[in-house]
Each structure stands twice: as C-alpha cells, then as structure tokens.
Image (cartoon, rainbow, N blue to C red):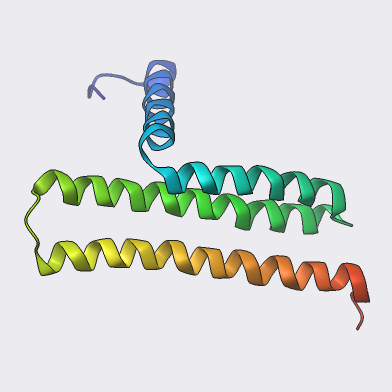
Length: 126
C-alpha cells in the first residue's frame, strides 16, 4: 500500500488486498478449503442449535479462529518457501510451529464445542 493512501482510499486498498489473500489461500491451500467447508457447517450448526447468543458467539468465534490461524500459517509457509527450497533447521521449526498453532486452535475448537454441546444434553447446571 502506498504511504499516501489514507481514509476511504486506504480502506478500499486494504479490503482488496485482503480479498486477494483469501482468494490465494482458497486456490493454493487445500487445508484452508477443507477448514472452510467444516467451518461453514459448524457456523450453521451454531446458529441453529445454540441456546443463547453467547453460545452462538463463542462457537462461531472458535470456528473462525481456526480459519484465521490457518491463514497465518499459510502466510508463514509461503514466506519460508520463498526464501529457498533448501532444508534449514529454522525453516522447519517455523513451519512446525505454524502447524502447531493450527493444531492448538483445532483442539480449542473441539473442546469448546464438546463443552457447549454437553450443556445442550445435560443442562448448564449439571
């Protein structure tokens, strides 16, 4: 983005870059496409089955968090790959840490959905 862009012009450029990033992730990252498909189903389920607005917001938030972390991981991998194809311990460590971040977000997603769903079946006071 050019330094002179401010206000609505800056916002328009930022939105265009964001859209390009989402499109690039969709085209080049199968994990992103898979997670988006699962997220679409989970968001729909959250909106249908949540008993309160707070439950729905929590379930949607942890679901979207996985998408956000996957985007950051994909960006990190693209930068590492851009540096060069040779194996390097730090490059491998960076990619592994990005993958670990996605894994942790998936564990958080699963734990949150299990805990909220347990309230649906047992009630919040049990």
